[in-house]
Amino acid sequence: MNDLKNKLKTKKVVFGPWCIIPSATVIDIIASTGVDFVIIDMEHGCHDYETVENMIRAADTKGCGSLVRVLENNEGLILRALDLGATGVIVPHIESKKDAEMAISNAKYSPLGSRGFSPFTRAGGYSLNNVKLHAEKQNKETVLILLIEGKGGIESIKDILSIKDIEYKVDGIYIGAYDLSQSLGMPGEVDHPQIRAEMDKIIKKVNKKGLAAGGYVAKNDNDIKLMLNMGMQIITLLPDCTILYHAIEERYQTIKTMKGEIA
Image 1 (tube, helix red, strand yellow):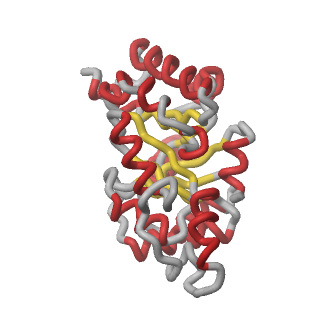
Image 2 (spheres, one colour; image 1 turned 45 degrees about the vertical axis):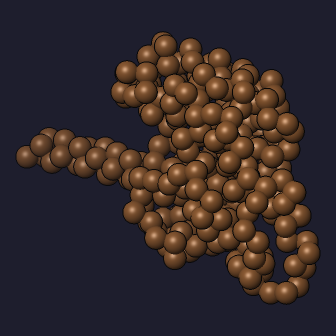
């Protein structure tokens, strides 16, 4: 079992950033810090698949999990991300039990799903060796996280969690608070009491089912403490581009202040 999957199954809290910058070097730097995973965002980032493969490879060299957030719940997009050797996928816009079942089918080989079979990929080792074990290994080790972003997903969470043996097919439910805030008519207000109340209710249901709950981007230590107290297990940090922006902004402002004092 891969390390990230094992951590999730043993209820350990895991941390990692969203990665918007299409760069294997950036992934290499981030993974070198010891984070548990990186999320390669193919919705908001301008990644092509060759770059994504190199980003996954960079994470692998540091023992860091690689999760690809695919653009949509689409068989071809999920297949391609997993064939590149990603640790797992985050499937967005899960609004119903049907959506969740489709994501499972797209990510899993028979008998759990209908993922297109080919061992001649990075995930399959490129060869004829262990062809018979490929599907079994992928079904066992691939991390599948469903992304609940809208009002429909909130209203359907009970049905989604009622999928037979879901705890063996899905590893986590991630709550996209920013998209959730927009769907509830409060775009960007992720700190709004109503948003947090909805998140708290979902997390309790997810944890009760034995799945890991994931949380929105943490802006500061108080956000992280809040998420931990809610019972979140998958904690996402700020996106790589935002961390870079504010690190340089803070340093630059310090230098400008020093310059003014010297002048």
